[in-house]
Image 1 (cartoon, rainbow, N blue to C red):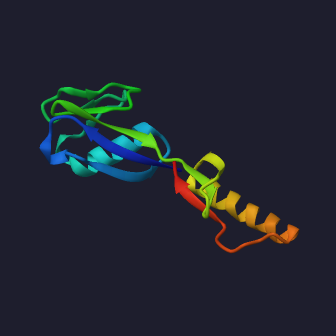
Image 2: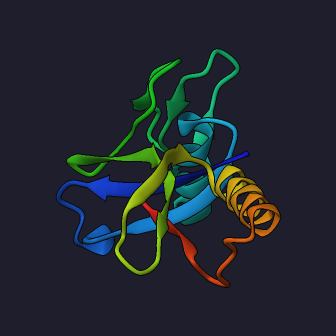
Image 3: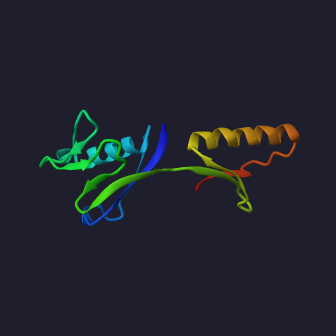
Length: 128
């Protein structure tokens, strides 16, 4: 599972500045999960991957990563993390999922302990 941030870009004041993070396998799945949880009455997925609204209008085509709603759309981006040193902010590793970042940070600390250079809380995980 990856972490995605789902956002809405459009005219619906109800979703102005909307963003929600979810765990999903893909961008499409993340967008569908959020859309269905917020607008269940307007979410009708078809077997062929098309999604329709309550009036039968297509709001997402098969393979499309956006769901259209009220002059805009819901979309998502994967949330990635980096490891940096806490003191100066020097970037050590980038492009990691949170789980990968946790594992990598632990490995760095174990290496530092073996080399005798370990400092508690030297590294930190930060969103890119």
